[in-house]
Length: 317
Image (tube, rainbow, N blue to C red; front, side, top):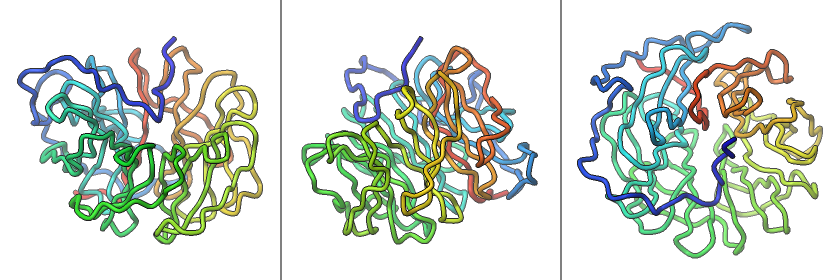
């Protein structure tokens, strides 16, 4: 059974690739001409109509795909050998940022593309490992992780890749930034206390606070769209499970209860669903559940590795 990708390490020793295509292709090799005419929201209990981007190696290597929130109509957006995953939608629904490890770049970089997969552009152009990019609520900035100064740290840059600024400076491993809905704070994972914990800091990097304070490994935070909750992954029960807590770290509540591995929670834009990844059915798939942990439903069904769900917040027709 394959393990989930290690968050802090991305494999750079890729084979020499020739003729990488930047045009968006579907899995059967045809050109993609998407019309994202999905609803802006859905009623409680109805999954169809929302878009989920995700990463999958179903095409032989990791690429970014998009599907309806119920798992239907999966469409491949990237078609470049290497690693293309960890997508994140802009709040206007027009752009997707993602991590790409392509031999043509000699490193892992932050890319951005249009929502149909066109216009793929390298934003970071740095020989270090850049990953885990997320849009600010106003779409003017992108937070990301880089080891350009040594250990992986949280940075922020303008949406066009200019003015990259380091926010954390602790010499530890800082990962998985997640903006608060009002843009004033960023939650993230760090091992600065000797084990992985969920922290929150001001958007300028000041006033970091440990929220989880647990001897187990806690990480992968995801801020709810209402701003009152943070979902995260924890190993405190002996395996990875999805938890949720208040933004001050109180009321830490377990949502999944399965001997398999569960990780990478992602809130729907209305806050009435949380997508996550689990290998409970033998391989890693994307699941969706209600915020109280009920109605856990598998939305991908493929023998490949499906991961990194990210909801479209606003859909442009």
